[in-house]
Each structure stands twice: as structure tokens, then as C-alpha cells.
Length: 586
Image (cartoon, rainbow, N blue to C red; front, side, top):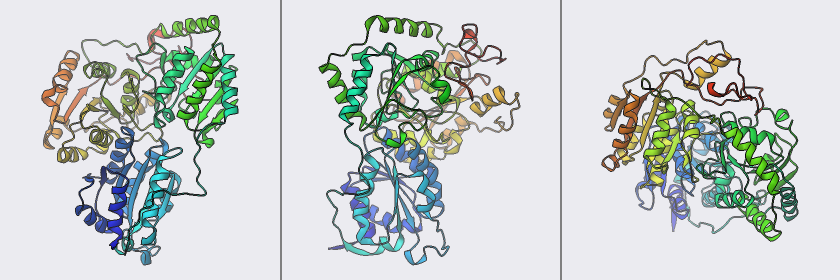
């Protein structure tokens, strides 16, 4: 029996086990929306902006083991989705984004609401398709889902002209696909794994550096086994938080631009570095030449060969699925009874404890004004460290990463690569729908939250009771910090002097709003509104925080990992810039 292309789209999504489609209708996709209306296998979530649709699909994917799906119309609907697509691409998130297109005879004629979606998204997708023949639609969907979630994951766009959704054909969904030009890596090379294990056995100062690739590959159990088997210190990138438990003694904190003193110093001074699913990006290794100034041997495990040695030359590259490579590496370590020199390892740990002792994340919470770090710490305590946390981008993002101790993967959801303001709330919606029984909190700032604040309406319609923790300092916080440090305190357009009453705004959308101005009220308010009484309600917390607090440590432009700008209490301990006048920071 023949069915329409639109019905085929719906059937393909059913075949892939899709649970939610996040989208916004328009002329070019009305056939698809009509087909969705006539089925009940998956649900559609009507967002209020197409960017939010993709961010919500992104948050859904990151907090689950599923491919996120978004549906947008042609023209402005498609271009509104591009920021979300680029966000997912930079963080390697598996998604399928379906965009409507004008009818095939009108393509290239500047038709109403026509844009070249394939051309626009080519730099920021793993792959994209323009389907011109209804008979190719089912196979295209099978390929799209396969490409999105295999190898290094990423977003795939399917652009579908309206006449293709109207055309009729028989539906046959392939059980599998074979793409000659796409063969994702699997197991790592055994010889390279043997070389890596041999090098590890010679280490005196080993260090394990774990990125988001370990989370994406579901390799966190293997990471934990490796860290504990070697008794080596471990750090996570911003994207890798939760890959190793933050409350464990062997975890030395996040590294990089705003990493802990001990993590950055260990990264700089180790002699054998095991990089797992990480890519030595500019926010981790600011200046490669300075990073390599201390001689070290580097083992780099990644499924994407283009990520290996892109910025930093490595000694033993291993291309393969991180989980599979670590599994074989662990077996070989146990089989050959590899042990790192105990005396050297003890000395290495003593040095790390010396670096850890000053506590580079120390701050002082007085009785007058709320410190943002304090809010995040109390949030961690009140939620018993079990909440799924999303964030927007800025100082609040770094405070969340530094002070909420993530002990499990897929618990921390943020835009790491693109740094997208407006990501937090729609991502929290997606995470809540993927995990209906979980506590989901969005840590945000008063600037970021306004970029997609209209999604408070979506949360009301679909009963997603996320908790919004707004660290309100009335500034573009990270912009202000950089202007203070590098632009002579010239705060050009970083002050927010026309803010809404967020409590009233939340109430206008049908939610609960609460404003907190005193440090003494932080913990009681969090306890009250994270209680079972408000489990089914969205709560908007507007915390009025210190305007002058900065994020420390900080590795400035052109600096090495051992040249951090440190918080005031550490400036006489070496390793940082002790001459800069930072004003009231803590």
C-alpha cells in the first residue's frame, strides 16, 4: 500500500524508537505535522522558538542514550535552528534535525521562505541530506540515524521539500545500511595498545585526562577501573565532568582555563599523560608550546582520527572506540601485571597534595551579600549531588562546573564547544522529559536566561518542573571579568540595567517565582522549593549575587597551565600572577 512522504517520515521515526520530537510547525512541514497528528507512537513537543527545539533535543540526547530529534519549517525556521545544530556539532551530540524545504521545482528560485539549508549547515553538521525523491526517504532516515550515533557522534540534517512529503510510494524501512564512504572506527590497534601499556609501566608521574568522548562512548566504568588500577590522579574536562566521580580522592578537579590549581599543575608536570576521549582544545591547553615545555609522553585515545595530534603532538595515538580500547588496555594491564613504581608514585601524590592544600576554589561567604559559589555548593548539598544540572554560558557555568560535584556521567549538560547562551532552559526541558523522575536544575544568569525565556511557556504546557537557579549579578558576568582584567575596567555594554522582575515573569507564565537577597536565606529557600511539595512545579529562583566576584583560577591568553591567575589567598604561594589588582574578588 502506498503512503505519503509525510507518513513515511512519521513511520521512520517510529521505527527508530523515537520518543519525543521537538519542533515548531510552518508551511513547508504541514504535511509532516498532519501525519504526526494521526499517530500515537511518539509525542511532539511544541517549543516557542526553533533554536529551543534543537537545544531541547540536545538536552534530551545528552541526558539519555538516545538520538534527539527536532523538526522545523523552511526559511527562518531552518535558520533559527542553526545555532542549536552548531552547538550539538561542537559537542558531538547525536541528533537528527528535519527541516522543511520549498517544493523541488522552486529550489534555487528564491521562493518564499527558501534557504539553502544544506549549504548553510554544511560546516556544522556531521552530514546532511536534501531528499528530492520520495523513494529515497526511508533509506535516508536510516542513514541519518546511523551516522548520527556511530563513530564520533553528531547532528545530521534531513532537508525535505514539501512536494516530497506529498508524493506517494510504498514504505520499506531497511534493517541496516552500508555506506561505502563512512566506516567508523571500532577496536584500537592491538600493537598501539601494547605500546601504551608498556609506556604506562615506565611512568613516574602518570596523569589521566578524560574528556567528553568517554561520556559519549559510555566508557566511564572503564575510566574508573583504569584510574583505580593505576592509582593515578585523574582530571576531567568541562565536557567530561562525571566521567570520574568528583568526590573521589583521586579526582583533582576540572582542568583548563578555569581548572583547579592542582589539576593544571599535574597536567603540566606529569611525565606520562593518558588522554581519553579529549582533544587538547584551546580552553584546556592554552599554548601547546608552553604545555610541552615540561617533557612528557602522551597516549591519546579517540574515535576521531582528525582529533589526534591536531593541536598537540602525541607519542602513541590509538584510534578506536574509547570503551573498547580501555577494555583491552585494562585486560592487558592485568594480564601483564603492570605496576607503576610505588616510590615514585607516592612522591607524585605528595606533590599533588601540596598543590591541593591551599584549595584554589576557596571563597569567603559573608553575611551581607550572596556569593554565587555558595548557591551552587548549597544546591549540591540540598540535592544530595543527584540532580541533573544544565547551564547556560558565563561565570555561572564555571561556578557550576567547579562547585557542583558530579559523580556520574550524563548529569552535567552544558554547551562546551560553542558556548551558547540560551542553551540551559530548553536543554533542561529535554533532560526532564528524558528523565521524568529526576530532579533537573538549570543554573543560569540573568542575561543567558532571557535568550530563550519564552520556553517557560513550553514548560507549562508539557508539565516539565525544572528548577531555574538564576545567579543574578546584573552584569554579563564573564564579559565584565575580561573587561576588568584585560580592558582597563572599561565595562562596555556589559551592565544589565533594565532587567525584568523575574519572580513576576515566572508567575505570569504560571510558575513559582522566589527572590533571594540574603545569604542566610539561600539554604532554607533551596530546601523548601526542592522539597516534594514542589516536585511537580517549575520554580524560578532569582538569587541576587555579588557583582564583583570573578572566576578563579584563570589561565589568561598566552599563558601556560602553570601561569594561572590565582585567588587572593594563594597569590603569595607561587604559580600565579601576584601583581594584578583584582579588587573585591572573594
